[in-house]
Image 1 (tube, rainbow, N blue to C red):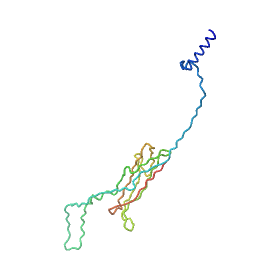
Image 2 (image 1 turned 45 degrees about the vertical axis):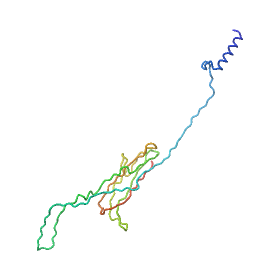
Image 3 (image 1 turned 90 degrees about the vertical axis):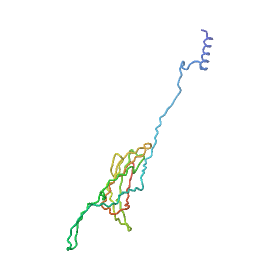
Image 4 (image 1 turned 60 degrees about the vertical axis):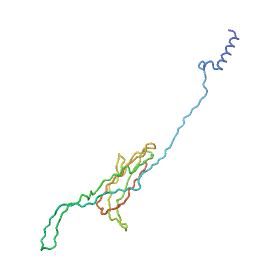
Length: 201
C-alpha cells in the first residue's frame, strides 16, 4: 500500500471519529483526573417536654333525700312512773354510703417531647379536700389517699413513661386516688389541689 493511500485512510478515519460516525467503544478512552470526599453531618434535636392538664376539675356526688317508713313499733311504759327511755332501734339508712371511694380520672394529663433516653418521669402529689368557715378554719374534710398516676402500663405516685417523639403523638394518662369520708360532716364544696410534675430523662 502506498504512503499516499495510508495517509488518505488516516485522514478519513479522523474525520469519521470527529463526526461521531465511529462508536467511542471502538477506541480506548483515557479517563481524566477525579476527586471525592465524605462529609459527616449532624442534626441536633432539642430536649423538651410539654404537659397538658386541667387547671380545675369538679366532681359532684348526687343523692336523693327520702323518708322511709319501717312499719309499726309498740312501746310499754307505766303510767305512774317517772320519765321513760324507750329504744326504737331503727335500722341505719342505706343512703349513708361507703366510708371510702376509689376515683379514677381518665385521660387527665398528656405529655409529648424528646429526651436523651426517649422517656420521662411523671409524679403526683396532692392535698386533702376541705370546706372552711368564714375564719378559714377547716370544718369538714374529705381525706385523699393513695395519689397515683398511670399510663396504661405502670401505676404509682412516680412512674417512668415513654415519649412518642415528634410524629408519635402525645402520651395520655390517668389520675387515681381514694376519697375518705370519715371526717366529712358537711355538704357543699370541699376544695384542695394536686400537682403533676413531668421531667425528661
